[in-house]
Image (cartoon, rainbow, N blue to C red; front, side, top):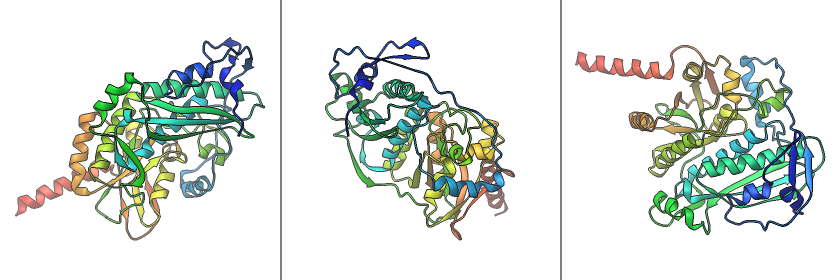
Length: 373
């Protein structure tokens, strides 16, 4: 695959506005392995691609039909209308994937390798590349981590690939952060320490933890491709401070063996993550808590929005501990429901008692029973 050096070295004029930095300058600033900066006089002029927003006729009663379509669809191309949001979401998801793996590390121990494969034809493509590089540089820097290395290659299609690993040859400026993050030599292996499938424990809890504070939106999602339209913009991901809090807490839960199973909420959204976990055991989940918190009436938006997050399963006995830890770290989480050990189906409810109300009722009944004794 041929390197696309001109895309990195060129200066850019986007929407008639000259950009202060070239992609190579932005990415070198956060990269451990830097590219040589050469004198290069080429200028690329392009325009931002605006999304065509339109109302899509969808029905929550057909969510399983949509789920099947989403599960069978892979992203065909980079979402040019939402380059910054998609890039930050992809970074978040790749980092969340490390949470389920064997090792001992904290977020500052990690570094990302980024590969942009890019086609140089078509309006908006170079603008999308520039905004993607800028978003990567800003978000990675805000997370307190580095790129290990990066490159742009010529290709027939446009896509961004990321992988996370323990940082190698960290700059001295980050030694203190890394040392404070992990005691001893950090390591990360491919082996999973958290199962990816629901454990058939009917009393256990399935919990959704969004790793961002943004609203649920469908722009740029696989769902929008399936239904043939974008009803709203992409989620405004990028709350680095909140992501770091979520990451550190969930990693501690994983290393301490508290998680029965887990999955990353990424492309396809929450319902697709639940489908991946339900290969051997189904689930019954309730969206009422999420709807109340976000003042969101649309179940489809909650289920298929690609807000990065974690879907975890915990024992009922650990619920109070999880609740206390989440409150202590000021992290929002949603108890969705329980595994359905009698089927592999996913039942979605969005009315009736919320999970919190069900927990309170259970506690009240328990206390009443003790009083009768």
